[in-house]
Length: 396
Ligand SMILES: *Cc1c(COP(=O)(O)O)cnc(C)c1O
Image (spheres, rainbow, N blue to C red):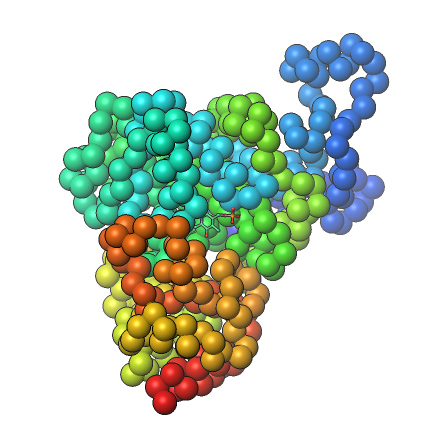
């Protein structure tokens, strides 16, 4: 239950929009407009001065995008949200807002490939330093904290190794030092994990994934306090400009209505596939947070509702064997991205994490035979038969 007194499923469908304000339109209208007219010059002056509520220009705010932001903020149990043109626009706006030259970031070891790239860029161009940390204990984190540390950036589950980080533990250490905790919650969606309710400061999503859920939009979200979001809105969002279009906001609003239902089916299917993969002789390791054999199962029980739709596994053999396996699939598409209705499979070492130098990749636990599967909403039996026939062909 969130602050509206309604449950997640109900909030996802109803919150942030009143049909009575829009001629009874059941769906949120798409305000496909770049700008908004003022009745008078004085009204324009008052809006720019912030003395009068109202829309000015769609890079600053747009009613369709607003409806989306209100809904997500509520689902994440945060005060306010901002929508961006991509997950990376959200990540970069948040990180650039929190830091200045000579500041320091502590980042989970294992992070989305482009976030890794952004941290490199911030270090080289803007002298904003970072360290990676496995975050397996308070001591590991404390050892890296400096007077200049302003942010702890966490991905959990970590892409693509599915390791988990104990958010309660991170928050405890961060609070002692007044450091902001930012969590990339893409893999879980707010349905499975709500970091703000654990005390984290900002949640980021690539809404391209589960929130959109249909593989047809690139988008990002950040959620946090009103104050922090207002600061980002008037600086790194407005002035760098990676804002979401009204139509893409509408696609997300449509996707969110079924988020809870979709997530449960993604989880049901993934649980079945994990069971099967673990029994297959050609599969070496299966990484799934909801699996009682998972190394971080105790953390899973603390902070996640269910295991999600992503599974990583290693097949016996080399990079070429992994590639041959992918090539043998008939139903499952070879593609990066995740959280779609279609089951997608990819090879992190040569795809999503190809930008990460080999040394760092190995440290993150990304081997050449690691495969990441985003389990879709097809019948799980069909997903499994495709995986099984491809594995059998590899074995031959
Ligand atoms: C996809 C993804 C991103 C980047 O999001 P885009 O929408 O592609 O810009 C960031 N973090 C994670 C965990 C992702 O999966």
